[in-house]
Figure 1 (cartoon, helix red, strand yellow):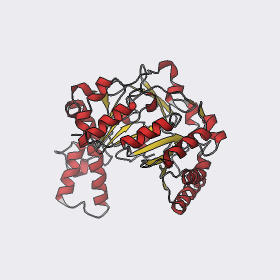
Figure 2 (tube, one colour; figure 1 turned 90 degrees about the vertical axis):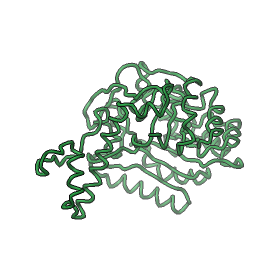
Figure 3 (cartoon, one colour; figure 1 turned 45 degrees about the vertical axis):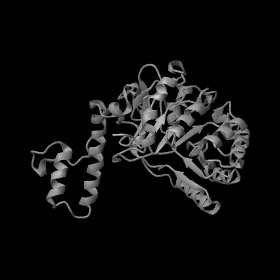
Length: 364
């Protein structure tokens, strides 16, 4: 099994002090590193088979002194490369490198459409300067697609429609609005916009942003605002995607290889918990071999069963439950092949233990 998307954590360092970022919130236990070039080269044999290699983790990739050589190495081996940046270092020199190398897209993280909002949430950053940097990229010949990314929070979600207008002015291509979904403490929990029930006002804001996007030729994608308990697979899709951490670790997602010492704190629906960092192995052992080891297979099997269960439920809604194939498949998924159908549990198969309680698995 080789991944469709390989996300490479280039650096865990950052020059900003964003109020909502785990690097700020967990600073006493944070591990600040740049990925070792030797570790990075371990993924190069596999980039040709991936749909995308995305350079992003819990830090700012443009701080890595070898970032352009790494991106160039991916392209030279037939890979497609992209990155996410806070935009501070997106200067003329960076723009020149980006266009020469041929990135698929550049995503720029912002925290609002107004300077007062953005600058207060992302300490050390100036929205005015970032907009100038984005404008420089969009003015360059052969520039890649440009995405503006804003994590939705109570303090900035009202600016989402204005962010679409700003994207149009900067000649960006897309606005992406994910949720603030990693919640390590009660203060961060208070910032999130999603919940178990729909908020009509927030839906109106999203609809207005989408309406402006259609009018101005900007693609708008806002993540769901209502969490649910029956999501078979999170949007990070660990069945087909993988992460290589700054330490060369191979992991299902960035949430399970957070660069901290000790356990990873997590709050979900008011419940406080902590999970151990979870990795399949190290990329130096070969990405293909690591992804086929017992630990990786067991992790993916749990999601395979959930996805298949969801498909069966969809089939049942079409009155196909009486087909022997579907009845037999349900038994297999539950791991209860020898039990009568009436004794088979109707609940969706459990997610891996590491994922239970993660907001990403609640569809947001």
